[in-house]
Length: 353
Image (cartoon, rainbow, N blue to C red):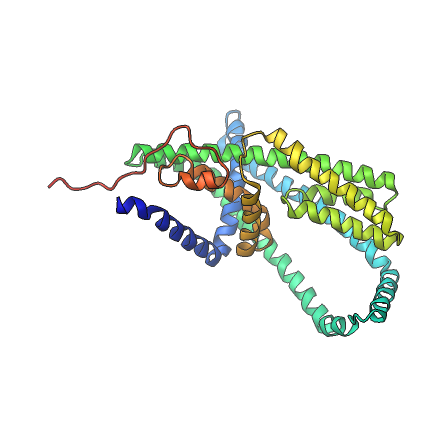
């Protein structure tokens, strides 16, 4: 009885220690987690290719497909952000004049920001910012190379790993692991399919709306909205605020900027709260609060990458915990339904001697 009562406390301690380990080993675990996530999509493709061609060729073609998708998404994102940044850079004098007028108005009303700005932004600060950007780009390239290496090894070893799990001494444990892995991969595929569809529809509607409204570079704003919508809550918020601020600076019309802001906000609200749940149904039964906590938690642990992978990790945790009698409460707290078939936790073997 005492051991059973202590299980929740021990589970919470184990979770805290696991999060600390994830933070400490982020350089190793972050690319590994992304590789596992990619394998959920790449493995079925490789299996189908292996049925019509030699396995090594299927692995090579699968890797080429992964690289093509990564390059395509990265190129479109860089193109959109670069175009908008070039527009802002070309009109730097205009925006500087806007800043001077705003600073003067604030000074007249007793709010001094010139000194704060001068203390914060300086030539050394700009040089450090540029150096950090170059360093981050190099780290990103290294990160993706490590991810691709993990994916390649995973495509080769995944069949052998499945056989190893099937030979585990506890039959229920191996069944639990294999079932949870299949269910996690299925839910990941649904999650990405839904996010892609919603992001695509949102990006197209953003571009059409801004184009009709006469906002410059509407297509680029649409692409930016498409990319940012892959990050729940935070991405749509950025995709709403940034174009609205741009409209305010470009047209100097607060009423028009407010109109754009509320129009984009209504669009994001409808897709996020009605259309997306209607499409996904109960397949991704996750509490919105848990989704938000997952995003902030993994952003804190792993930076910008954690913002993207936080929700898939939460899905995996809920899926693996659901069938367990001792961990099922974690899945239910995260918004998941009770497991239809519970899997008993393995009991330690005791000697009969």
